[in-house]
Picture (cartoon, rainbow, N blue to C red):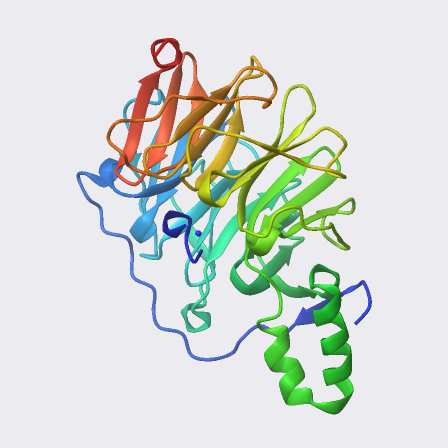
Length: 343
């Protein structure tokens, strides 16, 4: 999955030098009167003050009520996949061309911290544990870290995130075939699709059933046994402390033991699921392609359909009061929760 809409040697990390090739000049995103109706891949609350959404062609939008959205000026036209704020002032967004953007004025303006179109790889997600320390991940095992709020980003390779067979192959190539070693390092890791922080534990899910966790903010990782051979695109901790993971073709999994074991949950839709979110009452929402919207009020043991008749992919959502505000392939969509749950 090369964007969310398209369903999307030892145990220490190796720091990789950043590319030094000449880069095309980035072009500013067009200011469009109907940007709110364009493909939007992520939407997040920023405290209790406002909400931000991001999507295709460098679009970033802001709302103070969840109803009216204003497009913000952005210095790139790269598709954006994820947006994250540490507080009401400092935010980041990531996307194609290994782009990392930063705002220090509450999303009113953005500047480039990283733009590497020559890599031809997208970043899919970003998370900061505090205003200084952040991680961005993406296709083919891309992994960047900052300890200075993004002034500098270091490219890391975590061998422990490769399969045991690939770790052995790399160990052999390192001494016998340096060129082959470099080639394998660039392709041996899976796509990293989503980061999720649960207290001091950081989870990472991706393609081919990839699932890993870290207790030191990604300095070292423990790759877990695959419980599904397809891609995973979302993971969350429920209010009742279960883990829910979602992925391709309507696959949903639930764990009640910190991810040591997983049980598949049957759902009334075969569509790919892009994200999973919670509300304050313990409700769980699964968001997917073809208008798929599923709801659970029993900690993810069962789900009922709230599917949208327009059939448009839902990429993410936030709950605002009694409304669910969706980021979809046709922009922002708002539905009344009480009315929808009664259907």
